[in-house]
Image (cartoon, rainbow, N blue to C red; front, side):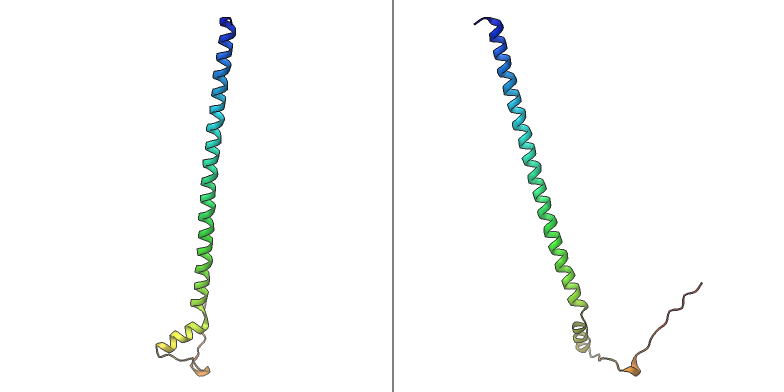
Length: 93
């Protein structure tokens, strides 16, 4: 083999190894980005589930049956018609 063809063969081999290394690096970066994206999606799903649970808790705490039970525990009663007052807000110009 003459030195010119040996040099070309070595150069071709080195370029092939460099390109394979670059492809491997790029694929590993893509897999890492996909892992991060999956983690973020999982966090979003957990946060949405917590939000739904909190909204359900708020609805339960605002329910009339709970408020009446708590009021009775405090010694209050449901007001009659003569005990109710309607307050009207007057807006000042």
